[in-house]
Image 1 (cartoon, rainbow, N blue to C red):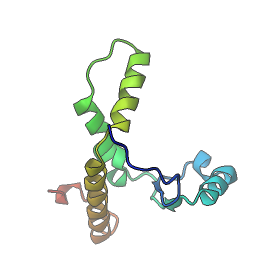
Image 2 (image 1 turned 90 degrees about the vertical axis):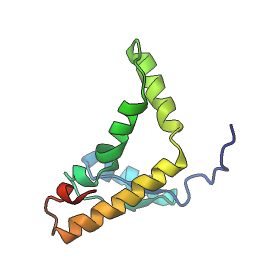
Image 3 (image 1 turned 180 degrees about the vertical axis):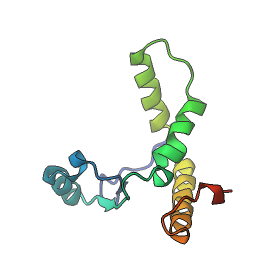
Image 4 (image 1 turned 120 degrees about the vertical axis):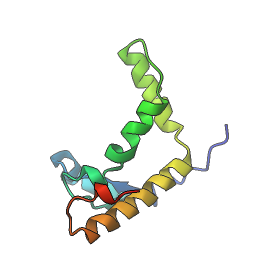
Length: 115
C-alpha cells in the first residue's frame, strides 16, 4: 500500500474541546513547538463534534464483531488508520456546514435544518 509522504506535525490542525488535560501548559507548549494549530471548539457541542456526528457511526458501520477486548482495540485502531482521506474531507466540509447552521440559528438547535 502506498502512503503519502509524512511532513511530521507541521501544518496539522487539531480540533478538540477544552477539558482540563487539553489545557495543561505542557500540552499547549508541545502543540505550539510542533507547529500544530489548535482549532477552537465550543464545549458541550456534540452537534459540532465530528466524533459525535460522524466517526462513531463510521466505526459502527465498518467494524465486524470481535471476540475480545484486545481484538476489538486492534480492529478499531486498524479501521481508524485506514479511513480514506476523502472521508475526512467530507467530514470537515460537513463541519463547516454545521458551523454555519449554528451561527444562523444563533447557537440554538439546528439538527432539523440538516439535509
